[in-house]
Length: 142
Image (spheres, rainbow, N blue to C red):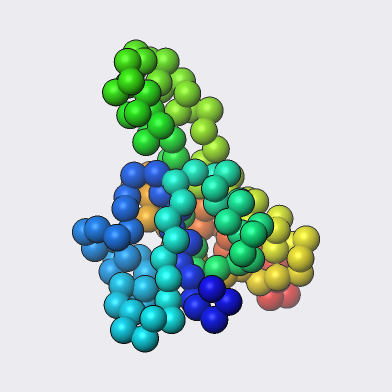
């Protein structure tokens, strides 16, 4: 994987391999005739942190803000009531938590941020992630 450009896709619901998600948010990863790009889909904060810890920073990160919906859906399908499933979802770490972790990882290791996109449907969450990452990028460039 060292020679490949990797898109790390953080999203609990949007599958980057179907529809046109990559085309919208990371078009360079949509078509890969040369085999030099790879998309890795992680659905939660912990898998996101584990992947970067094990592999280093990817070329690009695509962030969703609201994580945990997949867990809530599975819990309801398994018989849990919706109210309790929503409470479990609220306890999930968000894409902003992941972005904050990346900033700390970069600060600790004296690294620039990778390229990023935010595909979240939550406008406030999207703005918060972009603001956090942009602030660190500007800090690094001083």
